[in-house]
Length: 501
Image 1 (cartoon, rainbow, N blue to C red):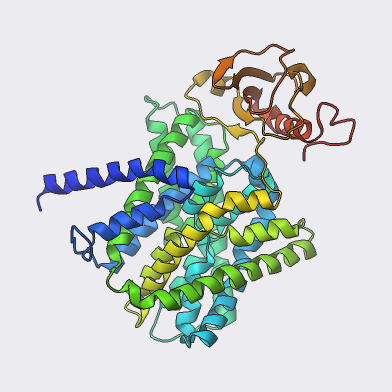
Image 2: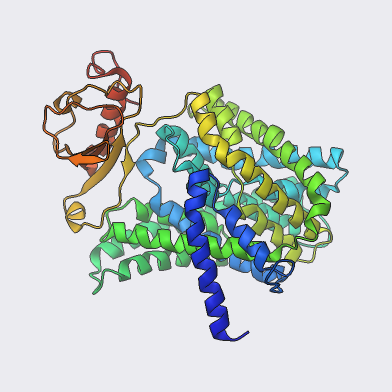
């Protein structure tokens, strides 16, 4: 086919993928399922019949796409929301990963008779939760900030150790690495990646604040370029590129940079394009004619993952968090964390690594992982809102960021928040002056029954109202705590000792 035909086909795929986002949003399914389906239709065993079976190319392009997705995740993660959750997320991304790999490998080796190296690889593929899947599903859920922060930070941190482990297990003709060797190499790569990320991030903030670029569109490009400098630099130093890029963009995304809203919008668009290309490519790489033969072992492995390995990893991580006095996880939070361990492109990309290395049996593992991701994303994704409500973890009144293309907000060092008053909230009936919000904070707009109006201090709030609140960056956390407190205990929340934590 000629260049124009390829351009037409690519543009049509992107447009179809964009249109499918609305369908996925209504059903609660991650969009990756639709993109994988498009890839299957385009692939050799599908309707179009494009021949694409180069696992090495898929692996390399997949790593780049994952770096873009992680960069967007770092840029859009609110540090104030995840800060308290980081210790728990780090335990889940290290101890939890190890427990999940060992438990799943041991059970599939015993029940399915899988060779130990293949079993460990399968466990490593599936141990990591996927940033794209987590961000696309969980950011639509009204979860408490700490729980949402744990899931987001975990998905950002846990790619690094799993990538290192898969590469080690895929290398060479036989598995000769000892456990101390694996642990030492993993620790060294994580330390190097963290050091690079925490060095480039602040340096990038310093430079972007002081260099007056001639066009606003250059700032988003500079930020994304810094992310790839970090990723490539850490990889060349034999460190974790994924950890480096996540930490760098986490620093950049939470700094007061010029045109920050535009930068985040650009990163979000780049991440969507990376997701579309990644999932369609992985769908093309899979051969639908081979998938029926692995459905049974894949389903068994998936059930062992979601019903045994993931819950065990959360349980052990909870014990470690408590022993280290980093906090505690309630049984409700542990149940939700166990079910919310969403898998997506990461396991499939990782499964291409041993296949590209020519490891015998690796193609079969790739097919297993492909089936597991599809089936269990369909099961887990749409059920998360229901589970959150049943466990009493839904927090519909939480304030959410609104990105506004407005330079005055940046110049005033201000944040714009959106709040919806849920049913059952004791904010119902409270007048705006009774919220007792901090100084330099104002409720600027109320949307009620589809009609918007500018409120006064005596406007009485009702369940179902949506509010726009402008506050300073310094007061933002205090505002969020006060709104949570009033929602829980009413206008006398402080009198009852409720502080909105």
